[in-house]
Amino acid sequence: MTPHTEVFNDLLKLAVESGASDVIIKTGKPAYYRISNRLKPVDMEPIAGPEAQAFVDEHVPRVFRKNWDDLGQVDFAYAAEGIGRFRVNAFHQRGAVSIVLRHIKARVPEFEELGIQAEPLLNLAKAKDGILLICGATGSGKSSTMAAMLNWINRNQEKHIVTIEDPIEYTFIDDKSVFQQREIGLDVPSFELAIKAVLRQNPDIILIGEMRDRETFETAISAAETGHLVFSTMHAATVAQSLTRLFEFFPPEQLAQARRQIAGSLRGFICQKLIPALEGGGRVPANEILNADSTIKNLILDGHNEKIQGLLEAGTDSASFSFNRDLLRLVNAHRISKADALRYSANPQALEMNLKGIFFKT
View 1 (tube, rainbow, N blue to C red):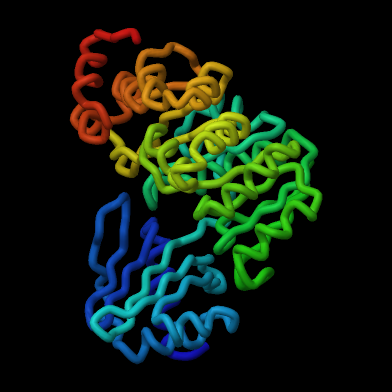
View 2 (cartoon, one colour):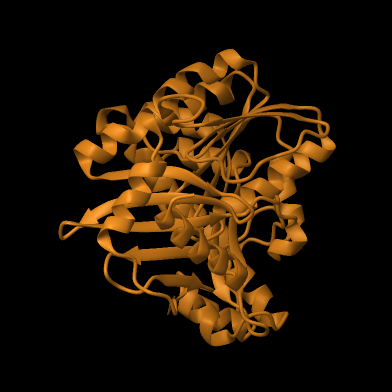
């Protein structure tokens, strides 16, 4: 092991022991850990520029080397023996190398560990086909929630599951299902090639690490239309924003076609935020869930997306509910504070009324 790798491994070992989700390294400055969404400086010597450069040069996969040399930024996975796996983003700022490493937890979490209501998620996971999107900001726990759903399928259903990930975040052990996990750069040169090949690999379920462009979404639609269930993630905070993002994949002259395709293939959205826990530190997930039933599909088909949020706010269906309904549940269960619930709510005025027992029907 080279000296610079040993320094990084010491830093990562302490990060894992401290429960940090991320390690942020800026050349010449102390490293920072992100713990429960707060940055904390590390009591270690700063990483020097040559050390940071040498770490990336040594560990960036050959297939990504050109990105690093030509573009000055790169994503790859790094495994530290006896410590864990990390998703690495290396880049230049002001001529120096910076590195951000995210800890990828090896063991697939259970719903109970995540603190999530299992039933609404399982209503969606039991679907035979369609597109299911898990949405939220970076660090909102999307991958963990999706992994818990897939692991439930693994234990309860006989499925062939093909994943396309950049990098692989959770390693699944086959139970009733068979997993094929493909990592970009390691198992296939590019995301585009993996997407083009996936329908020829006889999957029942496809996991696409991120819904990143129109080509990816159209592949997901084709898979859904031919009887596959597609899981993916998207950077969007709410159901309303998620729907808007999907329609942004299409040019204006194709919106009518887009409404038909989305209404026909969408199974649902799970949007997630992490809220500071009232006791014991850490964070608690809050969800907004849309189960795309016939009413929702008709609203999408008719171009009335704006009415969907009102249905979520006013509804009593256990399969679909707004963030405000879940925030109210968490406040009443004494798991989060009222102040934090209002701070994270997309509609704090409505939540304030809900907390007083006042609800409005659409």
